[in-house]
Image 1 (tube, helix red, strand yellow):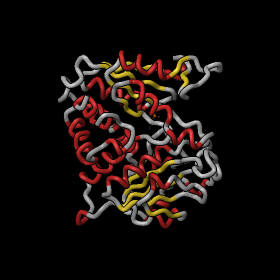
Image 2: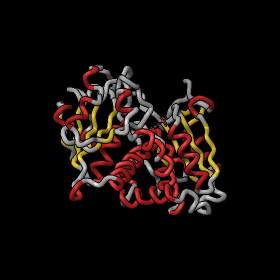
Image 3: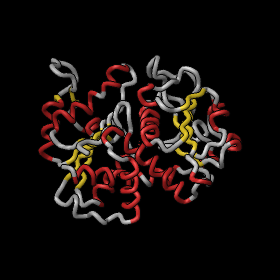
Image 4: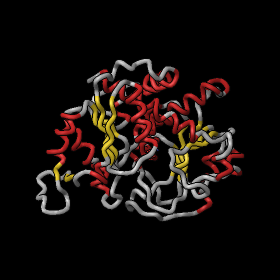
Length: 322
Ligand code: CP
């Protein structure tokens, strides 16, 4: 693995999941791997879980982690090639990224989409420019369209849950990704990425449900069953992944805030005692009800905890292949 930007950087998802589970069982087993190595974690946007779990993962591999809030504390970066920099941007990524490449052994970056221009966001210019100019492995901490560390964690969490409570006859789990209401337009990253990883994993009966006009890009959903009927989708579900996203086709809009799409305990009655997942942060009683989040059906805290081990497995791969 040279960089970690999407599922396409992974040779074998199950092997990476097993590596994450092995780190969970024995966090310090590879402390020598990252000795005298440094990771730079650049944040152009806010984060809690990704920021902390990546630092912990790096430290457990013996690395030093330095966090830099580029968005709030650094010079405003320019990403366009041949830009005439007479506006607000102060430093070109072409100049900044090679400097990061001198300071660090691995560069980790969080950027969000603008949600204003679909072509720009889906070109993934920011992260691609860092890869082009940094000269060291680049790890996505969430980009304009994808959140691969979250998705690896999600498959790890599903695998772990199935190991603890296997389905009868080794049946494939039914996994449902359901849209949920939200007060703000949110990126499609987590939903795109979850769909991309579950499809690539191939070990689930995968259904996506959302209101009309909330179709995600087929680039990520191809292979899933897609329905506008949430009740139908939830039937016999083993895992339900709850997430809001803004519209993709008419880009970045909120067409619906229909509270009927919030997942409630009542809706779980038609499922196979489904476990409920969410990447967090979650808007309680908007996206997901208290009664689910505070019940044994919820995997959200286990899922967030697993972010450490997923990050550790990926960082270890990047260090081994450096
Ligand atoms: N799930 C997730 O990425 O959380 P943060 O935004 O807090 O990092």
